[in-house]
View 1: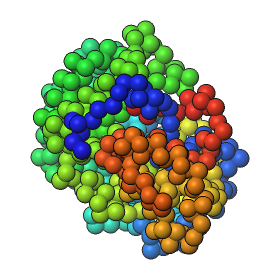
View 2: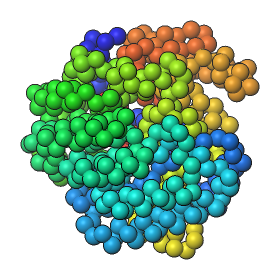
View 3: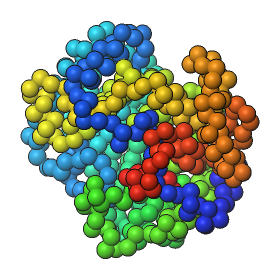
View 4: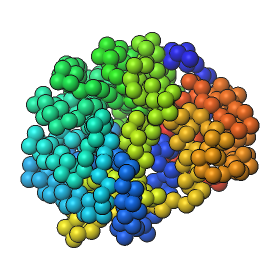
Length: 464
């Protein structure tokens, strides 16, 4: 299927666009408990330390921005004070030391990502300092994916040069929308020229991959203005694109409430904006990876689907062959030793815990056998675009999977009838059209959603 051939009736698209998890983890964050604390996290890290030959993924959260973007759902701190950043980096250094102490000889890293906030809020010397925290304690192996997120308006060529010299090879730029009126409403202020020049410079100095992020569902967006943004972005030919639906969660992010005065697109209008993106990106040669991620056919992320190398973690889709991830910084989430855990969500609490010599864990979850089984199914579905019960049974030493998932298999018949998958007695294969609705199919296997009211699921973002 070409993306431009995508076509669903409006009422069906609206039905499929209801809220649901993104499945960067299973079980999802709302199921975790605050009874899981620092001692549980320490035990998980020490279990992970026993697998010395397995590589890791690392994430570093740098929460600072100089101005709040009103659409933002991330954990950020607004400041222009360099000394404030330095205090946070002192705490970050302490966390690196605490975790390294429990990791033993496990040191190889195949994926490193910095997120935020805006990592390029840090000046070149601070960027070098954070990288040194990593490189003193871990080995970045040859061929590792080393990436970060940047805001084009605040990122200088000098910063890009420093990052490339340190070893960063992929860069993700938050564009959201290029229309000046939409940008003004959401407090986003980069010009098209800034974005174009930063993409060109990143390629010129040797970044192997450039990703751009767009948002649909913002106030004042319509098919004409968003179409113009898509046309401009397509001319830049980023290797990868993420086209996210704006998640309006003012009960979690108070600043988002101010956007309501400008009028947000209706669910039907959001769906049409997404359909427009599919049409225009398909016409320009982009293929769907899954959910809201797109890539050129030459990109490693697209090729990894057929090669069986595509993986999904809290950083999204990746080709990095690491089953476990350790995260540093406030609000960051780790996945090691059969457990998930999240750090304190404010810088003050995070820094205070580190100063006391504690891992700053605020909540988490130790997975059970059923969690791991369903997690494997959801990973296979969202990364391999199929679930083969015979193959999975051999991998997990189970011969009862057809009976275990009999109810789920019947529920998949709806998606088969919609053309989203093919279905046999022991195997489901996702079609290209179905890749856009992976979240809906994954929800079939989510035991924690069964019996929940629709009001409970409202805590998740819309799937379209």
